[in-house]
Length: 97
Image (tube, rainbow, N blue to C red; front, top):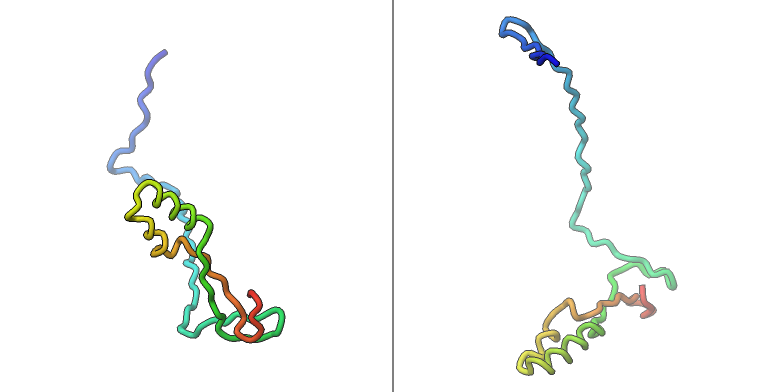
């Protein structure tokens, strides 16, 4: 088999490459400073929700583990927001939203 060298364009020849570029438009979301209030499906109240934090099961487990293995730090899960469950309630009828 003979080696065939590919044809190279000389500087005097015009070489055109057809390249297509797809451009997409960015998605713009309009944000404003007005708060969005949930509406209650039970009483129809539309306003700010009341929130209640409860210590989660994972937080309890971590507190017990910390108490068993490094007693001075057993309170650390009590300070972490990730160890709490936050529930939202309607301010009017006190049902969960």
